[in-house]
Image (cartoon, rainbow, N blue to C red; front, side, top):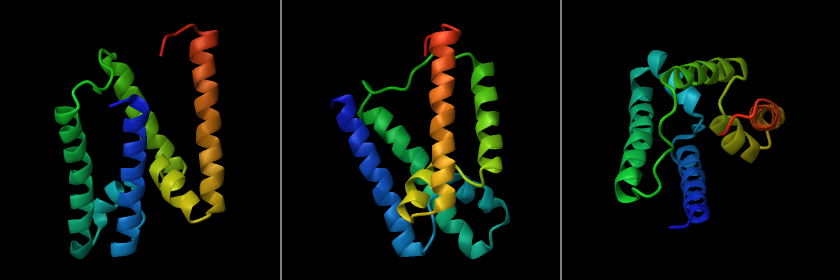
Length: 140
């Protein structure tokens, strides 16, 4: 499968899952909200949260098994991955949500706050790539 086709298929599946969660449960498919809400959610709320998160992990594992030629990049330094993960966690806390919540679900609901968040995410990404590739000379 071409890389653009796998990206298209992934985007369609993300949009479909976000739409179904909203239609069937009345909930927004923001991963950070689902994950962080799991700790203090009422018992009736835990089932769909756990199912959604397990579905993400299982679908990723299934995709890697069925499409081994589309494997994630490897050989990243562990410390860089840990620092990146912590920074993502801090960013989702500061931004009151993650890219999936704001970008997929918030923009779909015409949220002004989500538009501001997505513009901030994208500007930060552009600046980071520019600095890493053109100023620091890192290969990403």
